[in-house]
Length: 139
Image (cartoon, rainbow, N blue to C red; front, side, top):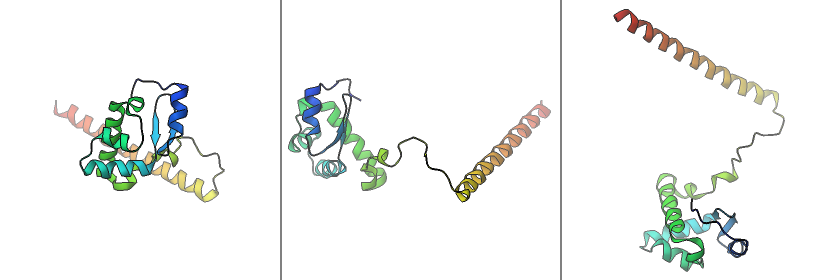
């Protein structure tokens, strides 16, 4: 991430841009549409700077390194997962636990999964212990 912090005036300007979803003083979240356009234009031979300038961004405001790293990040995500790799994954997973009350079936399924994990962990620990005993016997 860039070390440049945006001023309040720059934040207001960036928020008005149609290809900007959100902006903070530290970073910009671009729309999925812009990411797809950027990938397409990059494959046609345009540079990161050209892509951002043609989209109406002030490259001095955004920063050339920020633009280059964004396009590089989007290209690798596109190669790996296609268009779905360009979607903002934060909109589906906020990282906060769900506040809703789980049904009995959901709690049961969660406990079964937890139990299976603990059983697998115990089996792994047994194998490690056995391997350590075998090593001690050989010495």
